[in-house]
Image (cartoon, rainbow, N blue to C red; front, side, top):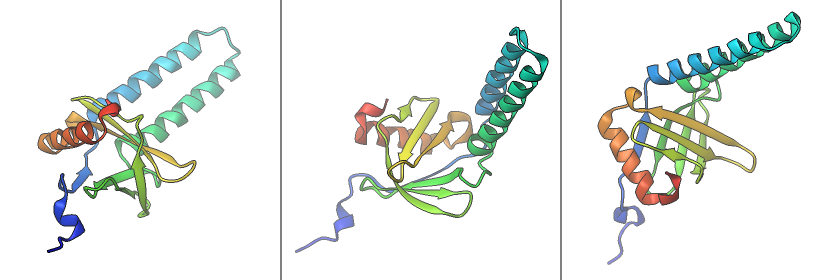
Amino acid sequence: MSQHPTADRSMPMLRVESEASRWLLYFLLGTHLGALITVFTLPLELDLQLLLSFLIFICLVRAMRRHVFRNAASAIRRVEWDGEGEWRLFLASGEELTAKLCPSSYVQPWLLVLNFSSGRFVNRSLILTSDAMDPDLLRRLRMHLRLSYPCSS
């Protein structure tokens, strides 16, 4: 008697979506503000300070759009794990990618940084914080990552 290949999964499929994180927003604002303060304390010409300030501001906006609000075209809106090691990434642009989770991912109770590889030189990250997710889903995701990828924490 043969079984369907998906009938013997050790873990159920996971679908991960999260809201905007206040913690991540405050962290990004704080670190970029610190960079701005540093620029203006350096003995540089005013035009160079303004240029660096503009670049820091652009970096802040890009990080917020990609990781906090997830409305940049390349931002990961949702990920799904099929139970067999394959991850599907759903981008804000509507694109769907198949990816592998990289060992450089970081797992802690309050913060997860999931690094994915979806091609030879194509890497994407999804930052998840405990204030932006359902606690049960976050717990199940951490458990899955620690069991399946023991070197990722």
